[in-house]
Image 1 (tube, rainbow, N blue to C red):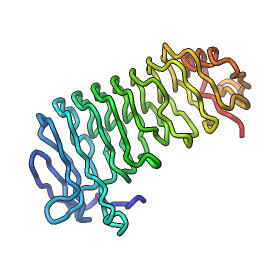
Image 2 (cartoon, rainbow, N blue to C red):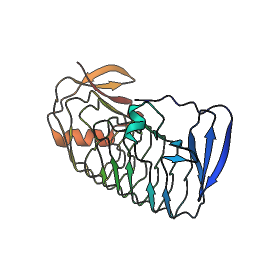
Image 3 (cartoon, rainbow, N blue to C red):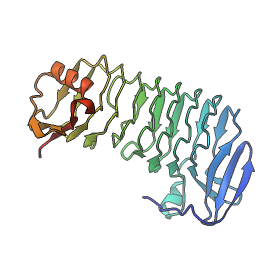
Image 4 (cartoon, rainbow, N blue to C red):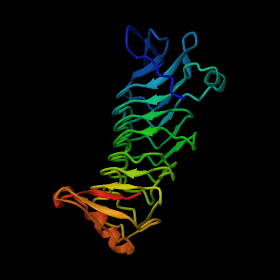
Length: 266
């Protein structure tokens, strides 16, 4: 359920604790800034006289290098069932380069994690979503450069650069519903060794597994019907029966070679 909150119009800013909130005419609050030496942040569900905190704003915690713990607002079920406003979004680069942050729990009904939201959080090891059946939409590069990231609750879209340089990932944290692995999604994930491509995946874009140097085997649940798309030709059928050969081709798939990606015919 996406509430379509209006963040335009007049606003005022209020400082509570070590956080600054922007309160809009639509009677919602957004975290927009914090003290740069903050170590722990507990974000309430509401401020003042019940104004709901609905979003972490763009770059709100960016480069807070001492930040170790963040508690995001938990879903108020009554508010949700009554179609009232609740915490639903993490903005662009919201936690960019928070090098001390080690884990994060994303509350239920958060619908979007913004571009580069947790990019280069070098100590981030674990990301969990309370709503495991419907995790948020992941914008490109949301976790890029999180080199310690070893566990993520499976996501429902594999966007561009999502896990680029996540060097501690050992498998693909993807739900069965994922239909496409976008450009650079798992590039430089050097702990990937053997992966299985789900039968529901219909496309793999160029550079998706670029420079995954230790990726030795890639098996396809549906190896039939795949075509190699090229900017120089209309496409070429692929034989994906050999997992070792598959891995080598995916590791080196590159625009420079004219390969725009692989896709499977229906």
